[in-house]
Image (cartoon, rainbow, N blue to C red; front, side, top):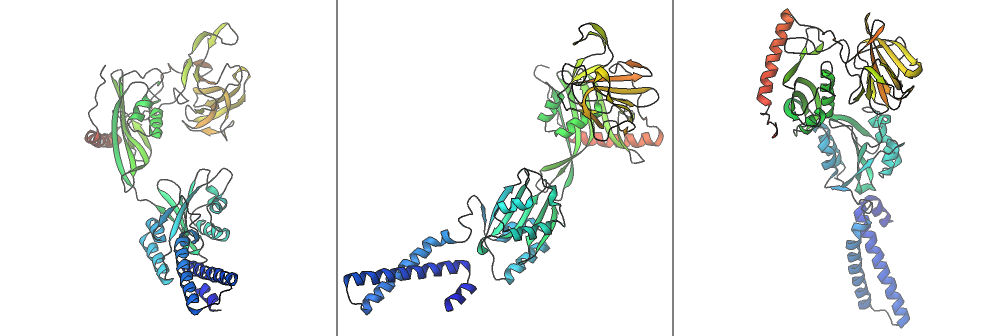
Length: 484
């Protein structure tokens, strides 16, 4: 009876030591009795005391050696990160008030449990419950944590590859202490144990500060490679290409040793790491000695656009190239048809691109035709105004929601490159219609967008001066190429 009370009230490690000790004493006593019977030797008080002493010593040695192997959770804690206390893991991610709350609970329970941390990755077709069970979390506790997390996060939003971190209490047969889900570089959601049946959850966001970065470089192979080598994020490179696509043909106008400059916003965490990129504030392309500088400016009505140094918007009526990263494979004009074999007029331009490459609307407008159109295959035509339309042929398909009568915005993805109709391979056939005639998209003189004047122009020039001063303080002198 006393031993049962001891087992119920003592800690797990103490129970292991005591049990191992008593087992060894019993084993030595049993072996001693067998040996005496075999030898038919009478028992003596001194002999019993010696056997008992040996039993105590052997039991103590066994307990000391076996304790690390018998402690709950130790055998399953390989490849896991040990923490001196659970607080080391969970308090580092929590606000001070929550951290103090957890410390107070631990002190009230008169124990500071050791913990192990495990990390699991959400598998294809799996969910949060399955992932927690795979990490060794008991089902009932996994359910409690998930219920708590639903206050700050939808577990159904988890995607394959998402990392899940858990802390397990080694003093209580690996009971769940906390679940940590880092959603991105800024936001993390956590669920932490309050007591035996409750968890609290919280979304933690790193405080970010806004910084401005400027860089420049020489173009040797391609603009993308040159900017990427200078640490410009891919998204901003694509933004810059899209901004300049009104005036620059990136297949023909970029030459070796042309130059670029860019200044953009970035968000950094307390450790100085860039975690998010913001807007391009200013950019310049020097192409064959001609500089094209663009400045981001917010108008009085809240609209934002990019303007040249004279306060003229770079936004034009139609895009020259409605697909990014494509190669111009066939120009406007007479050519030998690749399938029919005879010379005929090619009333558009072809851009070779992989199947499925997004196709953008060349300008604001309304979809006039979306369907199959003979040799054109899947075909899309957009009416932009009373004079101009754009057409896209040999498409793989249309974007969701794009149909006749749909209003689209310039740059919006409306379709995908394919090889339908009379086509020898994946490419986009692009046409510009003026009235009833098809004209060359590459030679079209497009009207300029908004031109600032009066107070609006003065506000722009003030903003431009401030940005150029900031840029001058950040940029390094550009070293010319050795063969320049």
